[in-house]
Length: 410
Image (cartoon, rainbow, N blue to C red; front, side):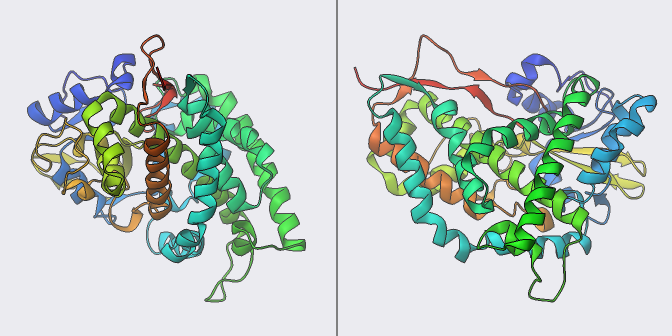
């Protein structure tokens, strides 16, 4: 196996992985990682090709493989409920099962449904911004990036908004575990507690919606679909957890990462302020430049010859989306944020193929509204020089900020 001296789980790499991505692309773009027990794929064309090949690069058994390679055998029984739950996620399934699950979930995230949500989303964004308009400084993550997707998803699911903090806490414990934490075992107890609590919450919610259906996402999922099929209870609970958690966390990080990038590249922030019509293109460039999902894992279904490497059957393959989106072979001057970039829409931040992000239309809409309203309300917004932003740096897969202090006015 080809080994390269790069530790993607090192603390400095989790804070800023892009220098290591560049080193890998230039020196050994496909290499074996002993710590992750899998192959690392870093160039755009290779990440794209493997993502489009579910026959050889399966999404199934991803968490099972992660557990078997990085959790001691004596703890496998303890983590079995999590493997059972996540194995039924639409993101962890292959066609035709994935196709059926996606059809159910698409009912809440199709372009027509999302377009109808725009006035409501705009109202939420404006209300949150109004709460901090008079402040000399505020934390974007606390005041906007977290509550915005939490409120949107609570309203979509028909949950009380006050439950959002609990749901966030439970999801975060799961995310840190299956997102490629440097210390899986250390986070196991919190993850299993979060799993039990969030499943209990959804079980009660589904029971209530079956008795009293409404016009919300959960009610739609428990009803008969257009083809007369049902989601099984385990599939239902599992995918409710996935859609809620993935949508909230990735949208939160898109806003935080994006605003940090714009304010770090002052000319791009000022361009957006003067040209709000660039907001749509800015969202795609932000996702390319510093997307919230950095890695997608696959498992080989057979021996695979890929470029100049030979992957054995049942090996993990980590497709580094964040590196692919900084590949100069695909994006000229990839380390420069450019919200006028015409090729930005070719990024793989949402994935490609069968597993293209089901919530992409909603995420783009939320991003466009948020950055437009921020630029309109705070044209002089800037990073707080006295309080640097802090990256969470807790998982390989999910990249985002813990804090983003900003200032406005004199």
